[in-house]
Amino acid sequence: MGTAHLLHILKPNVSSLGYALFLAINAAGVWGGVFPFLPMEFQTQEIVFGFFLAQSLVVSLSYFASALGVYFFPGPTRRFLVVAASVPYFLGWCCLIGAIYIDEIALTLVVIGGALLGLGSAGFYMLWQRLFASQEAETGNRDLILGTAYASLFYFSLYLIPGAVTVYLIPLVFLPLFGLCIVLKSRTIDPNQPMFEDIPRAHPRIYRQILHDYWRSALAIGALGFCCGIMRSLAIGDPQIGPLVNILSMGSSLVAAVALLLVWQVKNVRLNVTAAYRIFFPFLISAFVLLPVFGEGLSGPLASALYAVYSCAIMLMMIQCAQASRDRGINPVFIYGFFGGIVYLLHDVGFVSGTFAEQFAMMNIPPLAAVAVVALYLLGLMYFIGQGGFRQILSPHRSGAESIELVALMPRLGKAASGKERPQTHRRTRGGTEALPDGGASADSKKSVRGRAQQEEPAYRDRISKQAAALQRHYRLSARETEVMEFIARGNSVARIAEELVVSENTIRTHSKRIYTKLAIHKKQELLDLIESFEPSDLD
Image 1 (cartoon, rainbow, N blue to C red):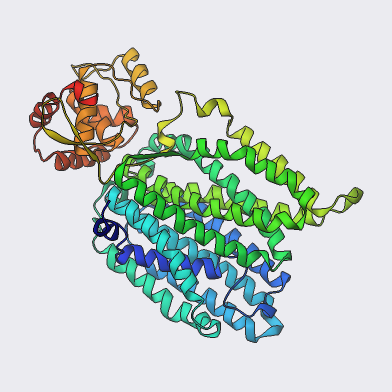
Image 2: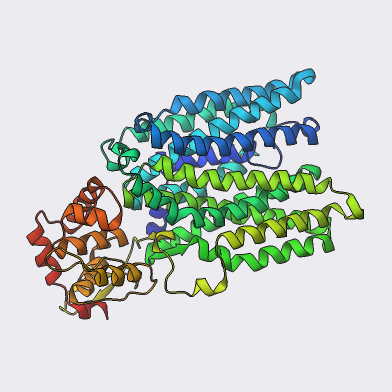
């Protein structure tokens, strides 16, 4: 990979820079263990606890309220209401600044400010999620990942500005800047996409299927949030932990984002959040078992490591929700509100549980031991609910819906059977429903393909399946686009495909348009001819 191409990959745009600035400001004033740009003497345990409790509860409630609001009242979410998020965010910072100078009502102002910042922060996250989801997959994912990387650089750059100045720059300069970025970028988005025109109550079966497919992924990331909430309760009592958490979490976001961007250039990336959590789980519970043994010496490193992983998981959560919205044609606010509501609610549960456990002095149990016991019990309970276990990591029947897919931007060139040079990517998962040539689908064929769609290794049933996979490599189609393409090639109607994939007919039409655009064709017969031109041996 040349230097020029590397610079092109890392070149920011309005969307990625705006999102980066938003994340940096959020880390400085909403999610950090301390407020780096407010006086340290102001940040007592009572002040920080009151702020975080109000802010975190409002965030989780805002996510759930957004999901429910979209389901019953989808109309307002078709517009980018930046003002609705900006006003509470601005007022929240004003309350924090006011609390510095008015000691008599400082706690009250901090609690109100925390609630307003929580509301504004959740609103802005919803806006960014809608923006990334409504873009083409490559563009949206790249901007999201690149923004996450630049956020770390912005965050560390804030320390170059005097703290007394930064606290005023955030609401007066930085907030208008990233709000303006959303406004400018939203004008380039097509408002007629199925995800915005969708009426959830018109097809509840699709939304029930969404909840069924993604609750385990939400629970896996929520378990990390739960652990971070517990460690946050410890951080409030130790002013040295907060800055360390901020620095390492932002640093890890930079490393993870840049690494993902570089790998994504040359190969397909397929990540399964649930499987990753199951691998991580033994190390997680081991750390909490050792917490009472090593005491305060382990609190800081453990909190920092957890928040580092958690910050990366939040990035993957947004990518997965955007992918679900594009693939299924559902409103991005619904899936993100459902997903984020679970994650942040478990974060709140961890924080409250950790705070309660620290006060537990019965039978001379040390506070850290009580924290470890509570954490292990609730982690085990969540693991059981999520039906975890190492056996399922290697199982061929994992749900493909849980996997995050990034199609390589620079596929390697490989020689196909026809003797021509065609771009090829690495072997990857491909799912498709096996319908009969006359458009009808037998029970056996449905069972066969649905089983195949849940496998991580290709299992081709006939020549058409292999040809579709070869075409997919050449034109860099996504798994869902390939699935729809194969349905079309087998003579299925739009209604039949929508029924089999549990999506709306409008979503299938949108996928078809994207497929035809990528393949540079205009008619179904051209699609059939193109598929037939690929040989199954191209997969070798």
